[in-house]
Image 1 (spheres, rainbow, N blue to C red):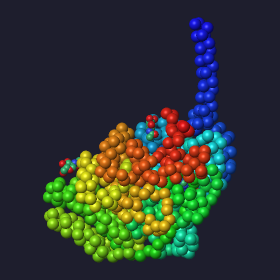
Image 2 (cartoon, helix red, strand yellow):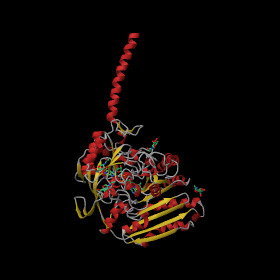
Image 3 (cartoon, protein in one colour):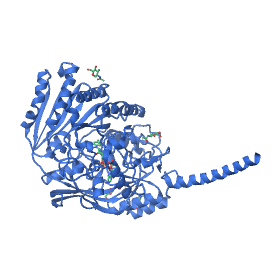
Image 4 (cartoon, rainbow, N blue to C red):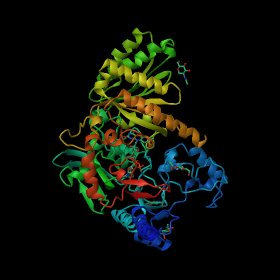
Length: 580
Ligand SMILES: Cc1cc2nc3c(=O)[nH]c(=O)nc-3n(C[C@H](O)[C@H](O)[C@H](O)COP(=O)(O)OP(=O)(O)OC[C@H]3O[C@@H](n4cnc5c(N)ncnc54)[C@H](O)[C@@H]3O)c2cc1C
Ligand SMILES: *[C@@H]1O[C@H](CO)[C@@H](O)[C@H](O)[C@H]1NC(C)=O
Ligand SMILES: *[C@@H]1O[C@H](CO)[C@@H](O)[C@H](O)[C@H]1NC(C)=O
Ligand SMILES: *[C@@H]1O[C@H](CO)[C@@H](O)[C@H](O)[C@H]1NC(C)=O
Ligand SMILES: *[C@@H]1O[C@H](CO)[C@@H](O)[C@H](O)[C@H]1NC(C)=O
């Protein structure tokens, strides 16, 4: 008996030694290193990388360090006050390496509103950035990340709601300074002949819009002017005030110049590297490779009709039934008003409804009243007073400036939000439409959230014959509706996190239940989203996207929360990225 136990113990201890050793090996191989880990690259390795990239390696010093005495010792009261006053603006983050305009992922690790004595920490910020200006810089970064087992991220502007452009202990490929703009008056391929533009990923939508306008053209770019047009914006799909007229941004792409995660530099078009072209056009940024330029279609510019419309509960004599009935009627008429070229941006609050931008391409100021006549007739029949203003602009950029400007940066607020596509067939079904409005009513009731929608017809107008990886639910939708709340960065983190919890646990499920079978825009979703993300964000495209991902990123270098293949990795309790 005793001998047996001793033998068992011996066996056990052998087994333990074996497993501990294995554990150490697998730990080294499966999780990336953090700056405090013994195997984090030595300063000499970083300095070697720096010479490989021509001195373009930047060690992150968070901009919020001017508000803290430790550990950077660059406290500066005046600079701190300036930073506090600009913390709500995209420019404050977009133009700088490692910074991101996403308060949740900033996580107050080095924030201008926390006490001076609190140490400034890197938190979720990249540890180093390469200020990329060439494919060679990208290749050097990919090689270093793989060889040294360091997490890699790609950042152009840092807008990503899911935090995909940042990561604890990461090396960031920072692409914001790739700002080349080349006009191609006569692009020619099997799929398209006509004007085009080749953009570096660092060209923000507002700059692309201005460059196109100067040459007499329009380009499909975000309502938000500060997104990287050829970065995550077009790669994720990309909606615009021109979506109904021309399609989504991904539909406009003629060529992607890309360095894949394997380090291959290639051009993907509908004819060459067609799988990669398909995946990059809507299948999500930061997943398959690093885009160094995008060539997209342009359209002749011309007049744009515009306008705004609003009414409140008070305008409906404080009759909630009448007020929400009008909002319901609005949605019933939406497919007619959108037609095949109009876009409409509107917000729904607890006690008001407001369209802040109608976009009627190639129409004049009289078109809006005609378009709205059946709806305003409904308002009048219910005794609801309303304000309506129509405008006419000579060009799309003038129209953009009027409603969402000033160009090139625009003025979109930074909110926390999650989105849902509203199916066209739903608003055409009276009961389903009423259920949707009921969900909206419940979401805005507390006053903390608003529902903001961009209505449009998102069929692939640019090239109906050419497939891409845009979520199919986009094509059947009449609007993308976001549930938005403002982030109060002067409030305690817990206040904002409570709102976030309410968003994902109450309001998102409510809107999902009211829009069964529809989808979520992968570029506008809350990181704590609890739905079936593969289905709602990628749908029937997922398996093909995953095969393409595996072909071009066999070492799992590119990871992003809710990105294709992301469930093959996980983040451990210290923040290391681990292969499962
Ligand atoms: C205030 C605000 C307004 C917005 N408005 C709109 C809008 O009007 N329309 C719309 O469709 N979307 C909008 N979005 C969503 C926006 O499209 C996404 O956040 C998009 O991913 C931004 O891309 P980016 O390159 O600017 O941002 P980043 O955060 O830098 O990158 C986003 C993702 O793309 C990857 N990526 C970036 N550059 C490259 C590259 N060169 N090659 C490969 N991968 C890359 C990143 O790794 C990350 O995964 C908005 C977002 C915000 C925060
Ligand atoms: C990289 O080299 C440049 C030029 O020598 C230098 O200015 C910069 O500080 C270096 N970066 C790092 C992270 O050491
Ligand atoms: C924010 O920081 C806290 C404390 O370090 C940590 O527990 C939490 O996971 C962080 N949140 C994010 C989104 O990184
Ligand atoms: C990044 O590179 C660009 C282009 O060379 C340069 O103008 C810019 O100053 C660099 N930025 C930083 C922070 O080093
Ligand atoms: C929302 O509207 C209802 C109906 O008018 C009102 O009773 C309630 O006070 C409003 N809530 C907020 C937070 O404004």
